[in-house]
Length: 335
Image 1 (cartoon, rainbow, N blue to C red):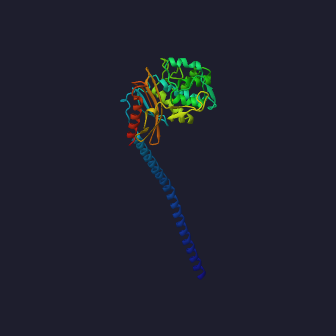
Image 2: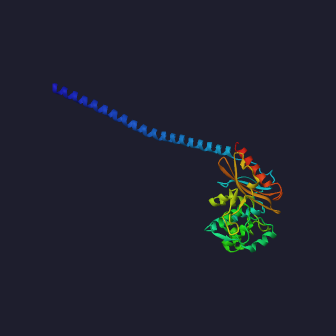
Image 3: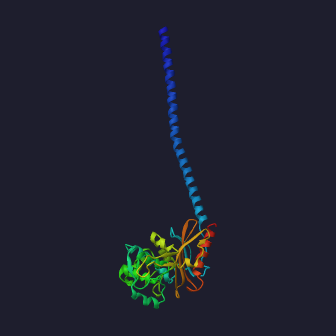
């Protein structure tokens, strides 16, 4: 009897233990099922929260961009054709007749200069300035840098002579050096114009002297300047106020010429920044023209204007226009 009772007690304990284990296992299985159901939902919730944050950031960024949009008028200046562009991105900020045909006058020399920089391997090479070219320059009253017939000058000095005093003798000398003739050099100019996206431009000479078939637009000239400024050499010349040449057979001590832009400016500051450089131009048909570069709040801007009334002896309205627009831009940016 005693043995029977002990066996019954042992069976009861075993049954109780197994029941407890079954309960624990059941609880564990139920817990695992709950976890499998909850975790994906939490993941989706986190994804939704992340998506929401991203969307909010995008909307905030959009609002920032909208707040920084520049709204500036350039149709009330002396120059009837004008275009303002961000030099870095090429974004056009404002324009007035920006794609209408203009005569670019000596703004043409931006193309002459950048091609010379790209095509002359040694800028310290001495190049003779041929005597025979001067008669036609005198007849056309072309602007000159000051080099004399038969003088030998470095290619670098000639490039400075192209951009600062707008020397036609420098343009012809470089054209002859690079391709053998101005006609062949003009072909090179037009090829480069097409390559960099100047869709409404055609050159007939290296100087910008008037020809009915020598034309461009403010937009195309801005495109050209933006391209040229990528060259460190071009930028250095374009932003110089003056330059002294190396000694030559005609000028043993060299000579100094000034920028046709900076010689009219005592102060190059504009609202929030500075006028860095520019290439002026003038013919009777083109009017006063200017392709200029300024920095405001650390960002560079290109302004091209054309067709202002006057000449080289009257008030320089194209320069006044540049100062006015860059001042207006600085004010629009919060200065």
